[in-house]
Amino acid sequence: MAIDIALLTSKAILIAVLFLCLSASVSSQGYMGTISTGTGILEPLTVGKNAISTARVGAISMQENLSGSWALDLKGSESRHFELQVLHKGDLIAGLGQMSSALGSQAVSVAGYVSGNSPIVFITGIDRAQTFRVKLSHSGSSLSGEYDFISRDAAPESGTATGQMTLLAPTSSANVLGKGINPSATSGAYVGSATKSIL
Image 1 (cartoon, rainbow, N blue to C red):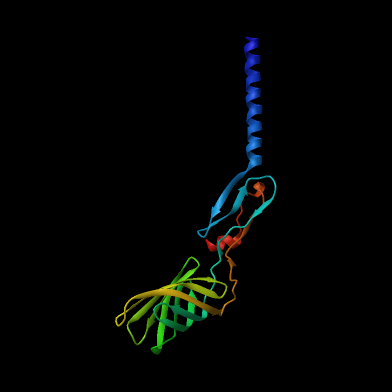
Image 2: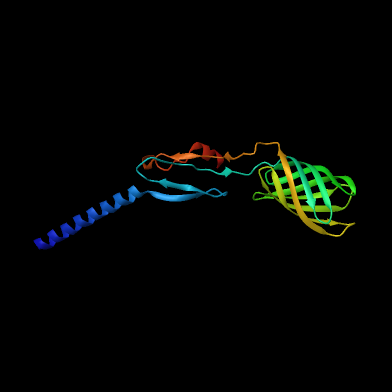
């Protein structure tokens, strides 16, 4: 009977030591997870680690404001030049301008949107029933892409688009919408008041 009690006691001590070792191992590793912001995944955030670590939390808006003057040249079965004044807010684009071609000059309106980093605009003649759909990409102030054209008075056509932008806003308009720190496990998971105000 004394051997059974000694055996049970040694097993209990062994289980307690094993539990303490596992607990210490788990608490030193902490929890490591990623943060999804809706605009991408940020660097991992470690919660529960013994050492102080920092992580940036929040969304970063990298979309450039394309408001300003655009000069576009469309080349297909006919060449056309556009001088446009464009307003870009959020993902919407609107504006007015002039189109010049072999047939003369006419006023046009612009409407469109930005998909990812690519503007897609519809340029419509104010005096004539015709519309150009222009799919663009931009690098710095240069524009390039392709267009389609429909008109009540002419055959449909397509071709290439090139141009230049003179932007009103600075070219780098990245905004950090929120950030915070995870000081340590002793204070718990803390994200920061800047991020709390966004929520």
